[in-house]
Figure 1: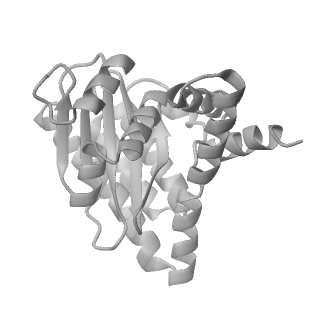
Figure 2: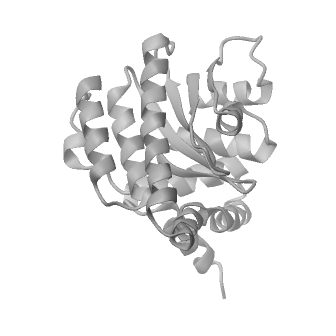
Figure 3: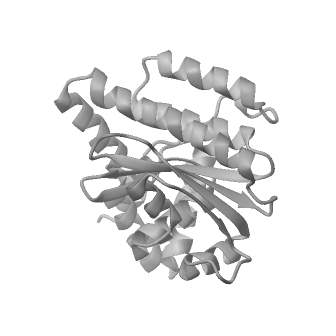
Length: 242
């Protein structure tokens, strides 16, 4: 999992949809690794959607699921809750290539456990757009609004556009390099899960905190130090060794 610092020009205010599409097109032409491409897509999406949002990219490979790029701590926390319970909109979107919107204020929302976690995190609406990839690997681009307006039809279309570019980046990796190399890149993108789980266990024991609090601490360290979540988790695990 990779979480590099966003480029300076992406930190300066909102980006128009037209400019975002131009940047996405340029990104697909650049020879960058899969994790870097997906992280840049997530970073750009945060500045393109209206209102305060957080974004993540989920990948599913051979039954394994992980967040391989993210912009915002709440996005990772909510992704992880869905992976733990095995139930949630980002999983359904990834597994079935669907686009799913939720409203945490709607008591009829089918994902009840997820709804309560959203409410505690201050997330009002979510949108997960499946990555249309014809392969055993699937995924979703997830948008979480933090006190922002409902995600309307233009927002759905924008999310599906970003998901399409993320799928293209994934498809390029699978098609343009040898099978073994593509598999190595996918494994590298998803290798953080074991370390993150170990680090969460260390923090829970050390700080007497919950799983969510432990994950939030790891994500904050990753963002504050501009280091990948995997590297932060590895450091926490190493610090627990005698």
